[in-house]
Image (tube, rainbow, N blue to C red; front, side, top):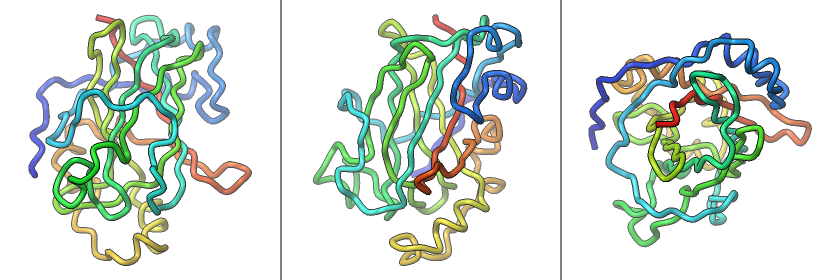
Length: 219
């Protein structure tokens, strides 16, 4: 299904990501306060959102795929300070490009969906798998951020194409070759997606860790 981009444009500067210490995943309040934060780009919710997802860290439900740890930081776009107890709500396709609750995934409404609260550092952690692709879209994760009961951000998170190419050479992704859309040709990505590109590294156990800092307005 086609996902129409939103018209609001806002950005999270690369300087903010660097100053928050993303590489070490340990942002400090002094460094965060020393930079000027900007809003993360708003993007379409898309057709696959289901409200009332489970509060949980592991959203795989045993489904196959390359393990992925998502580290999502939420900071105040005005002060750059971490926001504690924000609800980070994510959903994405499984390795076969299927969303729970829709089409081939209609029998379940929960796989690859979940909510986590941010800690004192503004960090929400998820254990999932690398998303699969489906026709017309580049690889992505949907996200909403709720603060004080209100949605303060709706967006999408993206992966470097070179990394996706490497992951997709392995099973179970290799059973579905020839993905038809890359970042540069994706209509949603072109509307600010480069500012929501995940930083992905392997940890000591060889598991991919994807990180993003999302600057939001509290109201």
